[in-house]
Image 1 (cartoon, rainbow, N blue to C red):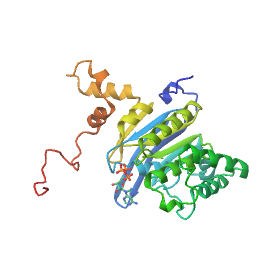
Image 2: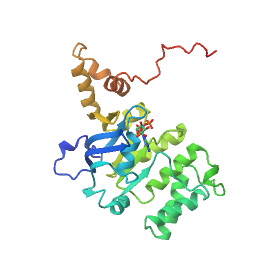
Image 3: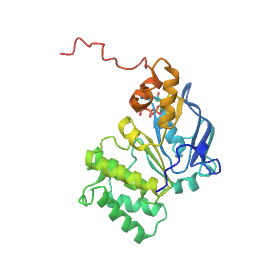
Image 4: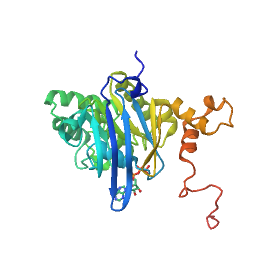
Length: 281
Ligand SMILES: Nc1ncnc2c1ncn2[C@@H]1O[C@H](COP(=O)(O)OP(=O)(O)OP(=O)(O)O)[C@@H](O)[C@H]1O
C-alpha cells in the first residue's frame, strides 16, 4: 500500500488538493485570519490545530465556500474556489462547526435529500443511505426526527451526509467531539480507508492524541496567523531547534501535545491551574 505523501514539496508535479495565498478574513476591525498561505497535497491527512478562537473554523468556512474571504485566493483541486464554487462543492464534503442539518427530517430522509442534491441517481442514493446509516449505527432510528437526535448522533449523520457523494476532499471541523469511543473507532477506520483510496482529509480537532495518530501533516494557527506547518517530525525538529539546550532525546519523546504547547506558547487568556477561584467550594 503506498504511503500518503507527507509534503507537497515532495510531489512538485502534483496539483495540490488545496492551496491558499494570503487568505484573510476580517470581521469589522477584527482580523480573524490573516495572510494564511497553505498547501495540502493530494492524499494528505491534514490536521489544522490552534487554541480556541485561533481562526480554524473561519478558515474551514472560507475553504468550503461558506464564508467569503476578505482577501486572498483559494485553489481546490486546481480550481479557483471563489470563481468556481459549484464545481468545487461537487468534489468536497464538509462537516461544518454548526452541523447545519434539517431537524424536521429523519436521518434517511436527510441522506436521500443530500444524495439527490449532489446529483446521485435514486438507486445509488438509496443504497448509500442504507449503507451509511448501518455504518454509523443509526439504522434503527427510522422514525426519530433529527432534531430529537443526541449531539453525537447528529455528528455521525453530518459525517454520513458529507461523504455520500464520494468527495475527493473532506473537511471536518471537530469530527470526534461528542462521538462515543465505539463510533470514534469506526470513524477513524472510515477516514483511514478514504485516505488509502486517495482522498484528502483536512480536519480540526482539539483531541491531539487522535490528530497525532491520524495526520501525516499538521499546521497550527494562533490569533489568525499560521505559526507552524509540516510533518510531525518537522514540527518536532522545529521545537528542538528552538530549544538547543535539550539533548537529542527530545526528538523521540515530544508528543504532539507538547509540540503544540511549545509552539503556541502561553496564552494570556488561558485558564491557569495555579490560579485559585477561592469562592468555589
Ligand atoms: N461572525 C463573526 N463575527 C465576529 N467575529 C467572529 C465571527 N466569527 C468568528 N469570529 C471571531 O474570529 C475568531 C476566530 O474564530 P473561529 O471560530 O475561527 O475560531 P476557532 O479556532 O475555530 O476556535 P474554537 O477552537 O474555539 O472553535 C474568534 O475571535 C471569533 O470570535
